[in-house]
Amino acid sequence: MNPDDMPVGSVLVTTGVLWLVLLGLGTRLKLPLRQQWLKVIGGLVAGFLLWLPLGGLPVWNRAFSFYPNPSLPVLGLIVAALGQRLFGVELLKPADWRAVWIFGAIAGSGLYVYPVLGGGFDLYYWGWEREGAVGGLAALTVGLLAFGNRLGVLLLVGLLGFVLHALESRNCWDYVMDPFYWVASMAVLGNRAGRWVIGRLRSAPALRQGEPDQAVALPAPAESPAVAATAERV
Image (cartoon, rainbow, N blue to C red):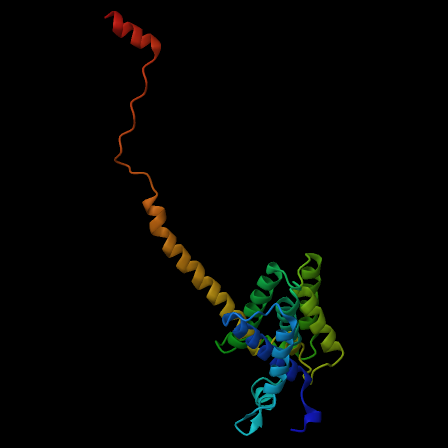
């Protein structure tokens, strides 16, 4: 593939992922990543890694063969993650990230898993220039924006990209969802669910140990002054 024909979306996503991996590695190695020049070097190294040969092809071309059409929300997520790591800017709040992963898990399962199970309804089919799919995504986008959730911004960018033919695909689902996004969403939610279950199992013995002993006798009620005086006279 000629460098002039490099797929912009795939190259940007690959570069962003490599940069995030290098930043994470630097954090594990306890490098002083607060110094901006180290972050810049990480970006330059990520760009250099794109051209390393891997199986006879540069890394960017190999990545394109496995992940040719990243959805636009994925690019937005990488920009948000880089903004947080490089500049400390929180483009997406925790509630936004939760919505991102939940949407990715539900929509991706409906697109990639449900048809395989023989449900008889192919959600992906309705994305081929179908008004229903676009209208449903637009309604979800408006609802998220009304509640202040920034997942709506990512979906809005995807819908605008569909209108402007930003990708080769004419299926609107390809602009807001892709297999990598779905797998990442399932992994994140699965990890969180696993940690929640482990936390509950670990806290259960502590809760049982903190329960009051049923066999402990309760103190006898104190006698009233009138009863005590009567006992003294007797």
